[in-house]
Image (cartoon, rainbow, N blue to C red; front, side, top):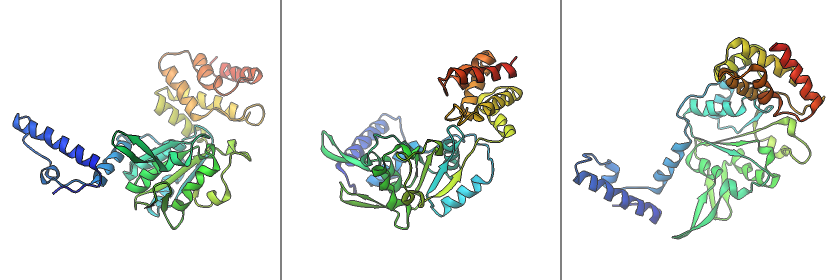
Length: 314
C-alpha cells in the first residue's frame, strides 16, 4: 500500500524504487530500505528530511562570557522566543549556531532586509509544470517540522512584515497562512530567535513594544580583553600576543563611538586581521585593510587609528 499526500512524492517514490530494483538486479545492492520495500511513504517524512540540511554537523567554537548558555537552554526548554541584542560582530549569530548544535536542532537563518515581505517568511504559491504548488517559507518550514528559525537583524525588515511572527510568540504558537487557508500549529521543537543591533535603532527602524514584549532578551557586548584575545587567537591561528594587540587597537576605536564613529572595530574584524597576519601579511597592513578601512571614510579618524596601529606594531 502507498500512502501519499502529493503526486510529486508518489512520482519520486516510483523513480527511487525503479532505480533500487535495477541496482539489486545488477548485484550492486543487496539491501532495500524496509520502508521502501513496504511501499509506505508519507510526504511529511520527505519534508522532514529537508530540515537535515539545516543541522550543524560540526561544533562551532563559542567562548561563553557569562551564563548565557544555561539561560538559553532554559529558555528553549520552555520554548520561549529569544531576542539577542548587541553590536555588530560580537558573537550573536555564532551563539545561536552553537546552541542549535548543542540542542541538536536544525537552524534556519533568515537575513532580514527592507525588501523582505511576509510571503518571504511564510511562503507563497509557485507555478511549475504540474500546476500551482505551495512552497513554505523558512518560518513556516521551521514551525511545521520543528526547528529554530533565526531572524538576523530583524529591525531591517518592515514592521508590517514582522507582525506575522506575533501568533508564534505567545500562548497560541500558531502561524496563519492566509493565502493557503491553513493554520500551522507549531511543532513542539520549534523556537523563534531574533537579533538586532541597538546602535542602528531609530524611529523608522525599531521593533514595536508589542513585538519586543513577546521575547526574553539577551544583551551581548564585546568580551573582556583577555577573553576576546583568546577568541581571536583560536579563530585566526595568530599568536596570542598579537591577538592581544589587535584587541587593544579595537578598544581605541570603540572609544571613538559617538565621536566620529558610528560603531567600533568588531571582534569579527579583529579575526580577519589575525587571519591575514597568520598568513604572513605585514601586521600594519593587515590591521589597516581589515580593521580600519571597513569602518570609516573619515580621513581624520583613519589617521587616528593608523597612529594607534603604528604604536602597537612599531
